[in-house]
Length: 175
Image (tube, rainbow, N blue to C red; front, side, top):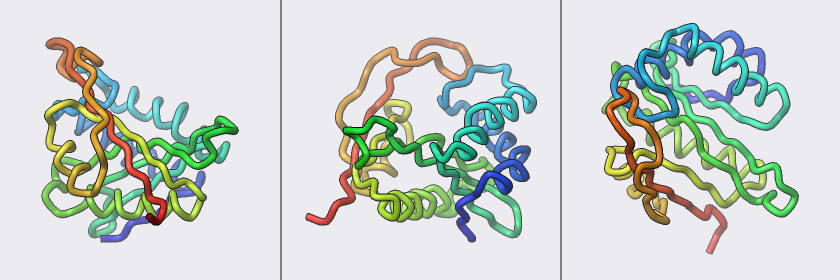
């Protein structure tokens, strides 16, 4: 497995693959801000408007995990822009294609994301995930601390109702 930080040109080139990963995750029930039906065009549009624009502006960092030359996972680091929060960043859109699961891709992406955060002077990371999901176990195993759960936070990907979200943080600064 190879984990790369994508610059703007590489993000633009990978956009169809990144969008396909997100679409496959949403179709599999992942609660990542989208509700079915969710098309490839909608996914690509979001990646172009939000992610690519953020990378171009230096306000977002995209990592991609390649296995056999194919991108199977991605995660984003979104540094806080507030002057009093220059030490902080959000973790966004940790996505692993269903075909790539159970290979350590998510763990590897998160470890590399922490390296990227440290290199950019960001030591406090925050994230949210669907309450009760498998990602909670991963984040806890990586040393993230659960702050709490907000019930009825977001619509389920299949539109069936509202789901809770669990919020986590991790301080990467040496003790």
